[in-house]
Length: 447
Image (cartoon, rainbow, N blue to C red):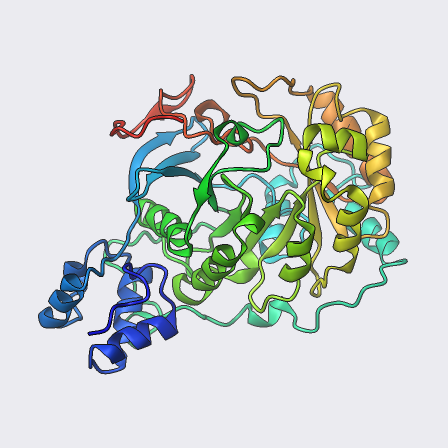
């Protein structure tokens, strides 16, 4: 048997599974059996793939092929239900993956089914009809159509809404691993990492403290999702799970592995493309590449400042790709029908949250089919910024909405266990007050 291209089954796509069984002289349907076992049943060893003949499994084992399942090393649970996982890999490195049982409202207003669900969840907020998210979207749509300038993407993502691109068990839809939960998870979100550490060095983010260790493989990215789905006993597509590439690392600096992982998550795991979002700090060439991908999650861009001087101070990446270049790439991005670009803005008390900053952001984004997610800073040790008060967040949001820019406030999830946006740092010394550690530390030090 020829050596497989990869030693792990996780990370293989249909073509690679087909090649694997063909080289072994096995019938072609074995490829579907392996893919189902790995991505839908989420087995952790070859021995668990009971649909394969023992001889074939032993041959794979002799050739050094393994499943490649991720190992959950630590597990923290927040008082709000958020779970932070510390997931370890074979080389001793680890990343963090976060499960948010009711999301954080980040999808609201992005034009997707998940966005509608997020809006419905927050519709009880004390907002007037004029300032409601739906009204803001309508005003923004009317205003932003003027001067839009770029053509909508020909292929409508919603065309795939009714298609099950995952691999059904035993060739039949609706059969999943024994013991799978029947709970509905319409707004649950998994936040996954794309790198160990991060090289972007945003001044308000704890992940930057780690520096850059290495890229994750496509297999390691997908393995995080499979581990969390198995631990939470949920299975897409019946359980509608949202997925955000917003954990540790910059996905567009690990572009090829990120793109392959997204394809595997759609085609093999069964998570709908329309329920995925990728966040970038602003890698302009990759934003342009991303617009041409066949399978393409929704796009979110970390803005975090209203002018170049401030953004360069907070995000050194701005020296290479400044706001003019970033906004130009956003204006050229080929949006699908009913799709909006999300701009994320972390509010830092008395730094970038002044009324003038809000007016500058409104002018910067004028004419774009977009919405803004406002994130009050999630604090952490070594971060020399303050979290603004609710009144400052509300004032910033109002200025944007009055200017026709839909603006939403993302709820902080898991702050008490260092699971919120910007807090991921592989913290293992224990949770802060309110959260608790479910599994013991098994030796991976904080770096």
